[in-house]
Length: 252
Figure 1: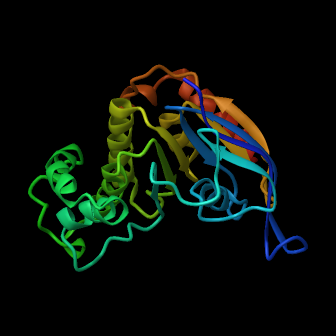
Figure 2: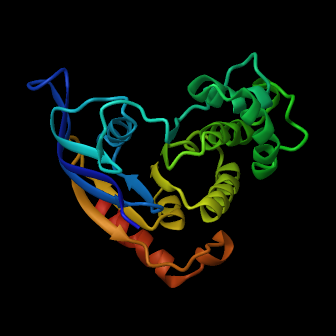
């Protein structure tokens, strides 16, 4: 298992050098099939870093590589899930799931054949022909995750996809995400504000400082897999990791 993502000495300004510095000298190495969460205070550059990894933002100095190729544009083997679900309101669940594959790969028949399995995987049976306004918030986010997974990406980048949801729905989607990752073992990078969520899901948690974002901690989460939230959260090591990250973040 090799390195999927490598970022070295990466610095990013908004408005070019002399403007607002968003990231400073960031160094990250992420292994293939690893689940990584990135946490940090609001405005520290977490989302900016994710967009750099997605090939949506450039950077000013340093380097960013994915599977040993420079990240200089969006890649077909990368799926991105944003904070809002961004579903097309005039398209059904079925059409929203297949659209990205049809546009990026021109594989309408293959997408149509795969959609039944994806709907089953996402526990959306019976909602195939519903429109976004007929779905709950959690269902919309499941469809958004499904859109990314339909492309069978090697890397899944997620920018606070559950941040606007209530606690119960968020917990349920954490369970779904764990189930999907444990089945497919893709490389996942998740941006989150929740320390407990990061500990529950991740192999490692990276912590960024106040802006400009610098990597100030790289904590390996030593908890057994597969993880069942109802069991994992009761482990003493779970609480220890939460406390350690809270201390690093200045919460306690």
